[in-house]
Amino acid sequence: MKRRTLDIIFAGGGLLVAVILVGLGFALLSQYTFAQDYVKEELSAQKITFATADKLTDAEKNWKAGSACLVTYAGQTMQSGPQAECYAKYYLAEHMDASAKNAGFPGATYATLGPIRTDLSAQITAAKAKGDTTAAADLQKKLDSATSLRTTMQTGETLRGLLLTVYGFSAIGEKAGLAANIIFGLGAVMAALSLAGFVHAFITPKEKVVFVPGSVTKAPIPV
Image 1 (spheres, rainbow, N blue to C red):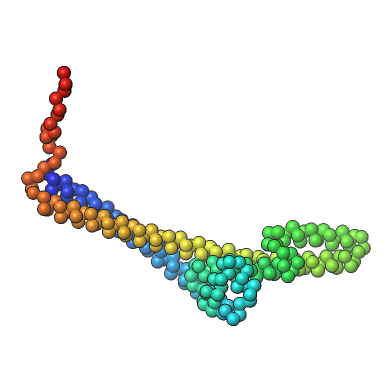
Image 2: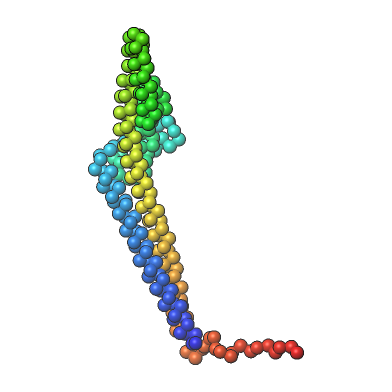
């Protein structure tokens, strides 16, 4: 086979791979663009605005290490996945945690408040059966507090779940964008190698051949 022909075959194959990589890169880039635009559109429609820095309490700023993001996004309208994550994990979660403590049920969640309410209802029934109206009234106040807190937790956890889902969607989009850039880079490298192959093909003498049958001299077999 002529060396020029071999070079053209390899260079052409490399160019085809480069085209496929570029096509794949554009497909991933379109997913990245869609994810970012969709997240921005949907979050903007909610009109959620971060509290300004002067309105943030020390508890909100220092609740957890990540709470510093509330200062970073202070006063901004939520439009991105990272903003949604910050609001859900540090603003809403802190307020829910504080609500649980203030209601007398520290660490409680929507799920854990169900058994608590059931137990309080049973205690109220038992107190009334004994004629202990004072204990029944106290327990009823606790039950009312737990019921109100459970409603708050349900709303808060629902919103947190939705915002964190949006964040996850945006994170997938970010990874698609990163993958697109890597693939574009690989495509560029492949295209450069293919171009070098074509150049080499046309500077190689036409008569040069490779893989000629019988061109390899066999060593004599010792007797």
